[in-house]
Image 1 (cartoon, chains in turn blue, cyan):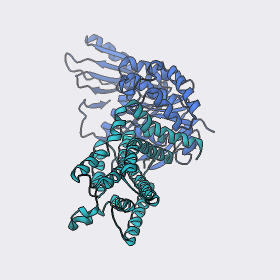
Image 2: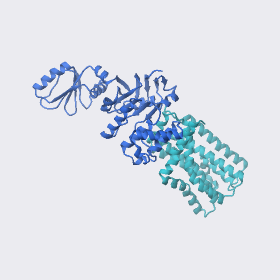
Image 3: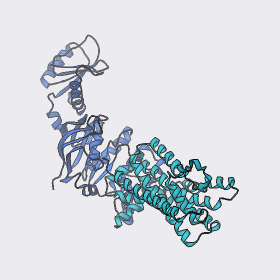
Image 4: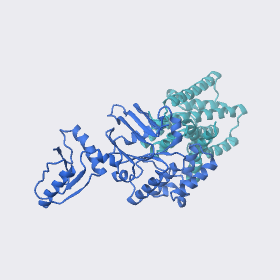
Length: 315
Length: 247
């Protein structure tokens, strides 16, 4: 059995709309955390739903550890658990009842389910909320109960669709800690549009845009695959500045973002210092990679209609 | 049925009936009272003349509302809580889930059924065959409404669609069908409309069984044929059109 999640020319179309997934092909090891990044509507949820056997693809194939998502559905379902995007707890249940029922649905007997509920609640520090009706719980606790629900199973492959959307920074950090702990024993397929989340948690990252997978690899590999290594931001002020290096994006606030090589960055830094301009310089980050890749196809597709956040020119 | 499947059925009964009534006792009160609104109205208007028919009508309504409410609950589980997505991607079987939710609908109806059965014992004089016939009709109506509820829930995407479905179902199953009164109360010129509802056939059979309506053998047989055929057809459509994994 291969420990790989593999997609081959995976596509999904809803009616006559543009494809939600367009010939997506990749493979990644089923260990650690794989983060799928993309803007709203990029196709993240569609991909996760196909892999989690909730949705049929229009064409192509996908498999998890050698099990085909269409042919080996029952075997896959034994081994995965899913926390869907915008999942909400059933308001009239308590956390204990929620997890207990879910375990019964998964085929556990009553005694085993009851024992697993206690463990799962304790693991995420939810013991005190065990018998509080879900509708009375705070947003963060609700999300932890959901996480606890899928953790209570024996599934070692977890699909977690935008788990931290709408959570405050402290609760988000709590959940990150949980995910970090979990990745030692589970494979977590995570979708998010928080770049920081992927940067901090993921072992491997994929970027999806308009249903197409733009890149995939570890953060180091994504950086190495970039044409440029340095990102510079020159703040608005003084006379117009038109650098002739790398790739330049102009922001709505008038600032100028430049992706460039280390040598060009050195030269440009000297120039900017001489002109007494305010600027920042740093190694290219996941955020830079994301914006670079996501802006590029959009602007290439719509050259005649420049985006609101500025025109781009290449040297 | 394997023990894991039984666990799945039990889980639905817990979530959608027992825990709901335990944590929200108001739903228990509502479940008891639901069939009595029209029953009381009919009793008052008829000065008690339609007592037995309206008790029987209330029993049929309980069966039908099981399916209507099931459609709402299933849709909430699917669209609002995304709970059904968690189940689809788990070892839960579609059949066990649907059966469990159907059983939950029945469990929710039990408080009302208990009161109505008690009233039936007091006010309806039926033979053993008549009582069994009525039970059979109720079971068919329940199966019909559950199949309908499950099928509609797979198409429904939000609360507005739910409301539309509920409204249409209520009209078809409980408004145009003469379940609280004899069909002869409907003016002859528009009586044919009532026969668009399967509940009409159920009501005629039940009213005949307790002696409130005299059907010819041919009419009775025709009612059975239509009722069973509609139920089977609906089941066939529900099995074919309902989907567990989204297409």
